[in-house]
Length: 219
Ligand code: PGA
Image (cartoon, rainbow, N blue to C red):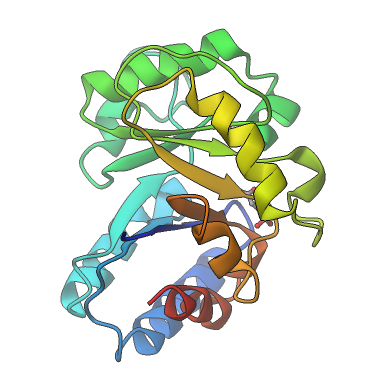
């Protein structure tokens, strides 16, 4: 079965570094212009359009884009917010409920649900991330299990242990893809894909060469 490989570029890179990232990624993918797997890149929202243009111009249209978050509000007087209606022009997916949003922005389960509703309204496919089982309603493309102690630590949770947590998470959903995130890299990606439908890659996507290696391991 085909796998879903997602890059979460977080806020790692500057504008200049992101431009280098996409250039190097495009070069790295020259021999991998088709894939049975789904590849989704989630750059900062400021660079979604540039990424779309560059991927399309370089025969990499099969690669999809996602936003790292959207506002729980509709269009309106919400200074600083990026709404679902803005993002839907350039992205197909959206990460929701990432532990860094919950930790640094006090995002609650209710807020995540509101964002799922907005995503649905604008045709964005939500990839809903959680550390423990959480029930949400609506059209959910994928649920991701991300153990806090494994995020950015270099200490991934063993795949079989992680999958037993995922089984509990997935009970709340029908017809969703299962994703693991937390210190996934080119060395361990295959272990996770033996259990999960996909992986979410943070640290190992900061360097485009490393991310290309992760992708190549999934072929
Ligand atoms: P990591 O990040 O690969 O650096 O652990 C994963 C994530 O936060 O989604």
